Image (cartoon, rainbow, N blue to C red; front, side, top):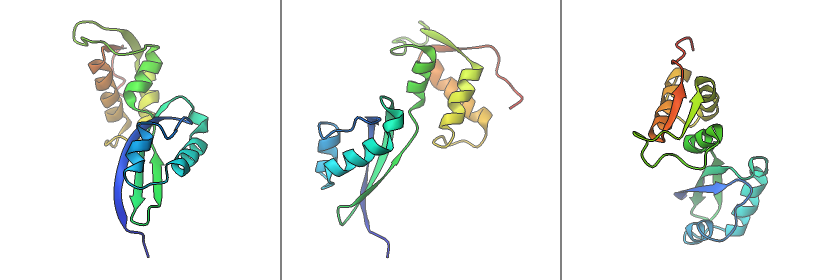
Length: 147
């Protein structure tokens, strides 16, 4: 028989660096989840993505057991890595902080495709380009129509 779900917790944790301190400890402790067991499993599963911020969805059950799904890094963080910037623009409509190419946008869209709510690569690229625009990052060139 399937376990009864008690709820879900969504966190963003650096890969391979989960520890019981805030925000992980209080978020899981208040739900009765074994914090150290989660940290061990998360760090083991994400050691290849060390240092990258990873969204994780933790489903916890009535018997205090849990499962979790690790997603790809957020688009904004991948854009900052591609543009080699620390942060986006404070005024994205006036001050542009970087430029990236459509090839870089395509790589990010392909990586993030499973987490986005779109069906085609071109629509995923448009979503990534929109995020870039809202961060003050310019996408060079024209949109490649032959995807």
